[in-house]
Length: 347
Image (cartoon, rainbow, N blue to C red; front, side, top):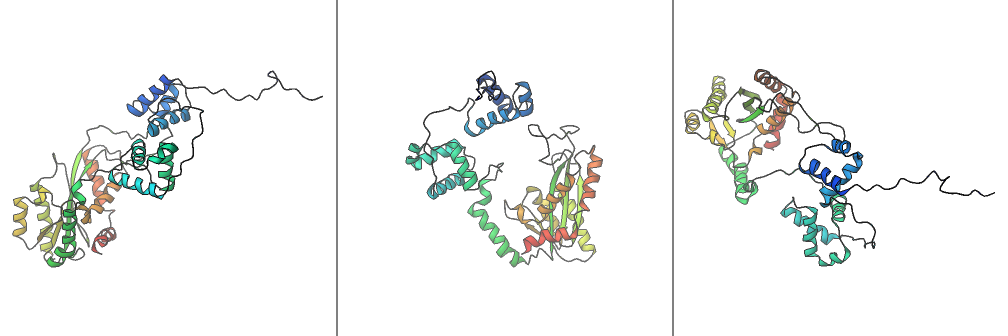
């Protein structure tokens, strides 16, 4: 006898779709995405939703600016295929302003190609095209001053590298001392850390107002010439910088090292009358870099490595321990490291 199925003996019915009320979705978006008052995990517990549901609600807000559910049903739209001309237009739009949202990208694309409006191009379609076809990714923006790459600044860099260095006999490997200052903080920590999905990566500090230190350093192709760590309110002054440079000059003169060029950026403390007089009364020369060009000084690479070493121990307590830790970290920057930094600029 054939088996008859009925509601009573059918135990395999699927779960009924449970729609999230609009007010709950709105609270999740406001408290997590807008105010940052709670984490995704806390929102899931508070409003009795699964973590994946909370993520989907937030994704809809971030990508499409939508709080409510996506309209269901209706006529299936034609699949839009973006072509090379559309890709070129998107590149130009992003080159003009890389912070434009998907909605703005869509509007500008439609203004250039009105025929796309009839095909119902969506922001999600543009997102897929951007990430999969064009290989673009969404990253943190880095502010750069407009004058940093203006024609005048680029020309000054060219003149420094091609003309001034040769005319003055500047050789990064043989007769240069690279000097600069950098700020360090006892709460200096890595910008990234591990945590469970939906939770925040937290590093506990003793206080928000940690010790600020100013470090002055001078390096050459032959190694570290001098390092000075000071607690300075308001940053390094011209007088402090002058004393630091004078100390390196004395070491050079005591060893009959010959005239050297002191390569530094054009910060105001490097150009005070006292600093200029110091160079006038010595055998050594001041070599100021073009504006907005700190990357032409190899010591920037040295500071970057030093900060990375200091960040290995983010739980220091007190200025004395931080100073000792910075001093120990300088010993890990080897002569080979410095040669490699300078070789990059010398070639």
